[in-house]
Length: 455
Ligand code: TRP
Image 1 (cartoon, rainbow, N blue to C red):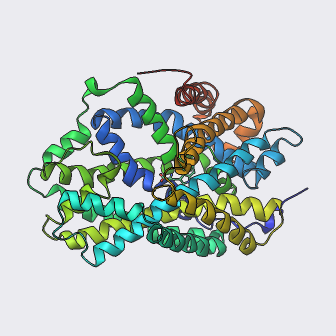
Image 2 (image 1 turned 135 degrees about the vertical axis):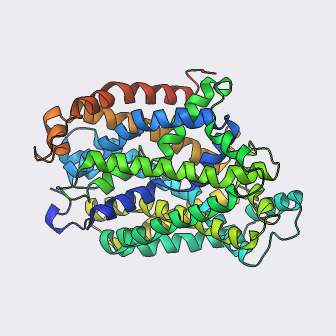
Image 3 (image 1 turned 90 degrees about the vertical axis):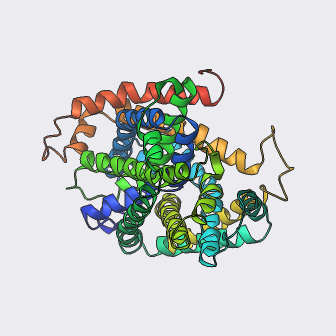
């Protein structure tokens, strides 16, 4: 049998460590960069409400399913399927997941690199005195460059690799336990600044007061897609992390805690951003530039803005780092367990491949922008293939596997810790996993690839 035996596997040391690492994976650019601009474009409060429903009904179910596979299989995203269903093709779900990890890391790492440039710019007071138009130019000139973004991306890859090489307990868990509380402190400081600005109330109203006339089929689907990406679901991240969770920990409560933390941070990010956006009279549906163009423009008009700009971009970089760590770990766990490499070797090989793909992604924002396939550049192709195809498809097969192939007995045993826990909500969980989650995911998927047209 391939893989290391359970006794010799590295694992998380404490319950808090599990939550910090898994929430660290979930909380990322998806929460602080993407959630606010998606909410901004899709009507604020209405988007938030739908998002919450999806997290509870679909997100939590898929998260439970992934953790169950990982802790039951005691191996990486591919190995766990092989261990639970030997000789069956289910491991291909893990293969898709590893592929998705390479693709997501390639473009996600590019944006993660930008956060470092923005930390650097805020430290040297680089936004001061610039008009919104100049800030926009600054952003576009930077991301389309052939040198600077790649340097920062490389720095980010090296940081991620350093943590992953150190291991699960002494790397991932240790850093997550420091970085996640720090992230929460920073976000709270930013909220206090933001809500004490004149005119901030409008921003909170925008975020919390649902205007249902803004809801379309498209809003619903982007909320579900966003929930999936934000919770790190569909490619085996939570299978891999689940395999490091102690047999005595409660998987159901862990899944709920991680999902709620992730959602809370997205909401907190919105509370830090929208009051400031409204206080300075800016349109909330600014889109992708919200964080890199709009916010710097606000910071430089705001009392204490120099300081808050640094805090904000450090926050963004930390959030991205605990997420890239999890993307890399999915690959490294597979390489080291199934292909019998040392962690160090596995990490180096993975990072070199990602570095190469990431470089092309970065260049596709500038010098290589003309090279397209079906009108998509390299970045868009990786983004589309991974987040619109591989993640929902992976999520679908994961819930089908746990719901129908793994055997209810085995699933119940894993979730109740072999009967030690009552797991009273088990019937509800299995219902969500069997019916609600697959149907919801299938609809998003069919819409994303253009077969089903909603809204
Ligand atoms: N969830 C992270 C974010 O919100 C990104 C991420 C990390 C991810 N690992 C993942 C997304 C696995 C999908 C699958 O930024």
